[in-house]
Amino acid sequence: MAQILFTDMRPHDVLVEDGRVVPLERKTEGCEVVEAAGLLALPAPVDAHVHPDKTTWGQPWLSRTPAHTLRDLIEGDVAARAGMTAPVTARAGALMDHAIARGTRAWRAHVDVAPVYGLSNVHGVREAAQAREDLLDVQIVAFPQLGLLTMPGTAELMERSLKEGADLLGGLDPVGVDGDLHGHLDLLYGMAERHAVPLDIHLHDRGEQGVAQVLEIARRARTSGVPTTISHAFCLADREDLAETLAEAKVALTTCALGADPVLPVGPLLEAGVLVGLGSDGVRDPWTPFGDGDMINRAHLLAYRTDARTDEELATCYEIAAHGGAALLGLEPARLQPGDPATFILVHAESVAQTVVDKPTPQFVVRNGRVHERSSS
Image 1 (cartoon, rainbow, N blue to C red):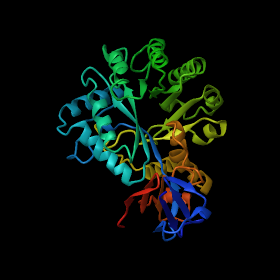
Image 2: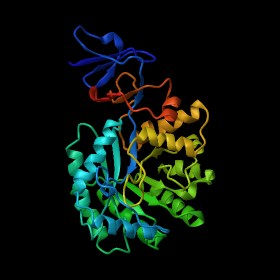
Image 3: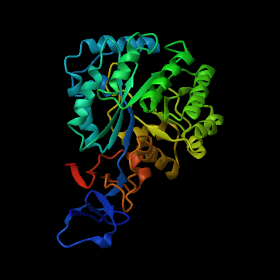
Image 4: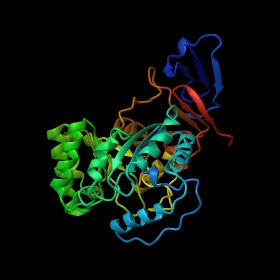
């Protein structure tokens, strides 16, 4: 029975036993003591949407070409990656290490599957994840970045990927990329039901075209029972009226608070009971020079983009990253209550709200009761 007591924290000390938070009265003689010096303990965040196979983290600077459409970005991505010399395992692993040091407990990783790549990206990300399995939980989504129906051979690779490292199946703009809403969803939901796996569908299409796809996805999720997430869903930025429909269908959403793109109305969605997660999306990849895999920074961006002002609004942005992400990935909640996994970070801040604004680097990163990172700052 291993015990660690984290002392002088607010609002009280935290006692950890065999990887879980336990009541303070269970403290025994000889337990290890970690002096937390008044730091604030927060549940470890989750990156619910990241593309680690594309990243250039830790590699030489990549200059990006102009892109004006989604297709431009996709084609630029393929061209840039053809020139990358570092393997996926090394690049994804470097980003995982940085995310772990910043306190992230889990990823939902969207990984490209296409004839040009085969399953090399899935294998590379899974290899990097297995090397860090005690530090980071990684779900891999087999993602048809180049198209599902429009790129022959992709569907077969996606099914194979479930035996070779992938956990979920992904989709991409059934209308905007594949041009066939029902054909795309028939294929996706058919595979998901055969293999009993969830779906996570990228949806960049906007306006009524996007809304029509959201409604059809919600209908299929409700009738099939397949757990479904829609990522980005830019078309919902000003459609608070659809929140109850999504909640009834148990369709989850992820947002990434990206540059000029619309952001989900997280307040009304949460009030309606919609599960919302937060992600990094691309990190230093052919799509964007930005991103750092730090989910405190991403909570800050979400707060900034949604004009959060009150302490409650600011704290909600962090809760989406921590509790929303954990629920989306099916992880145990880490709310620092007795019985919870002792997976948390310690930061210099007076409150969750200040953490979101100041973006402090975690001084300690604790995973299942073990201190894995201690900041020297």
